Length: 141
Image (cartoon, rainbow, N blue to C red; front, side, top):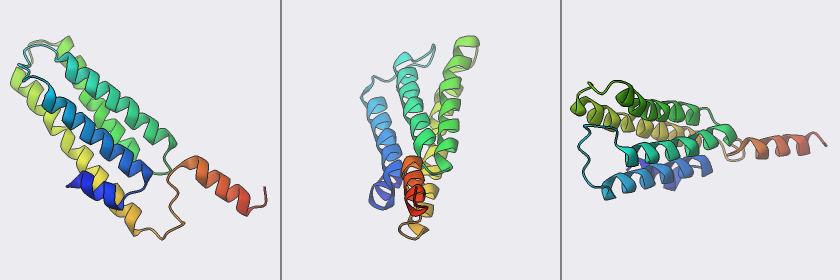
């Protein structure tokens, strides 16, 4: 529902993050059921690729919320590193914590989409480059 809300009402950054979430969910559903006794490499790769995408959106978007989503995703990637560092962590903790970290991403995406929708048209640039060009053009430069 959150991704649908972002697709319908969000700007480009919201839609891109929604696509990243949908793709990540699709990848994790296609993977065979992991046992979480060791590092789950396909999930680590999926989390890492999603982190890269979120960092790129955060770097270019004219919004603050993608920074928070990227930070939460960094926690998800770090969880795999913690599992590698300390293999005595219970597999159930490793599995549940990784799944629970998806919820803040969805909440932040929903809030970001809602805030985008509330702004007046023309006052919410999706990307920093467009804002800078628009402001330079308005100033005659």
